[in-house]
Length: 110
Image (tube, rainbow, N blue to C red; front, side, top):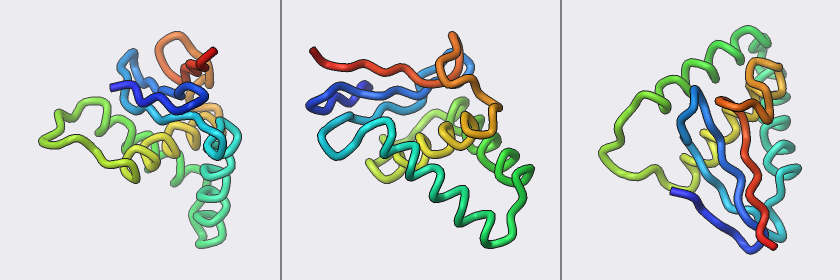
């Protein structure tokens, strides 16, 4: 389901399937979502995790979400975590940000 904010939405895809959609608004922009992901990366590395571990964890997480059928709809915090995983993989160049089957789709409102 696409979640629209006052400025549109951002959707995350993996292997051709929509796995998350988040609203864009006055306080939530693509840059703010990217900043959140960068903060999580930095905190994980300060705790001693390597880039390889971050890639492996986030790629595994996105794959689980991609192939899982939900018993119930993920809540807003769950969706933020899913988007952060995609943005982390984009940051490490594992997923092309605007690829045709993986990455992000920005849907601004006029």
